[in-house]
Length: 115
Length: 111
Image (tube, rainbow over all chains, first blue to last red; front, side, top):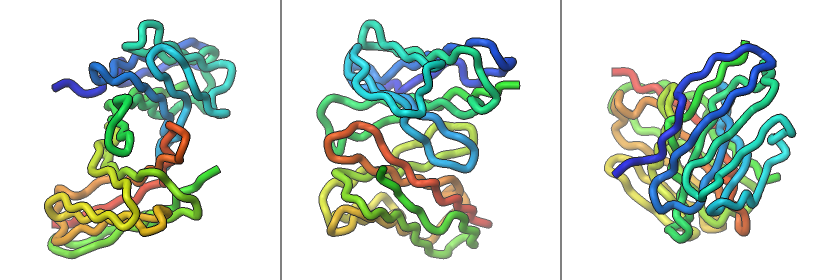
């Protein structure tokens, strides 16, 4: 039984560079979510996919951020022209289409540090 | 915008003590989930509650969803050092898929 996986686990980049993160959800989970968590805070919602369709985006998701889920399986989150304020833990979660309370299962996260 | 307030923010207790963590909102949630998070890791699901007044037990942890589905509590009996971590509550708004998280309760259990 494999859970949600994320790659890389850690990323250090210089301001202005582009970064891309990958998330592999639990197999057969058709819903996939991205959240961002800064130090001392709970995660904040960024965006949500059902299969390959991006159905909801937070106002936190500026135009420098783009997420895709081209085949309805894995997803990527790209940040262009990174800023120091983008430093955070980026969390991916998945859930089945039907389930008790629509529980979301989280991956280990990708910690981004922008220098 | 729905908000979830958790209290206390920090809690340091001795092994064997009992504790309760609270999660409150003025809004109604269709379900509420509790997670525990270790440093540098993602949140790990503890429980999901759906029905108002629902009580669920997970070994020494007891979770309750308020009758009006606006609040929840987590009670730990005879805390152990392995219970140390960040406890997060997260509510799911009816008609949406995004979880709204509280800011968490950081628990430290001293041996």
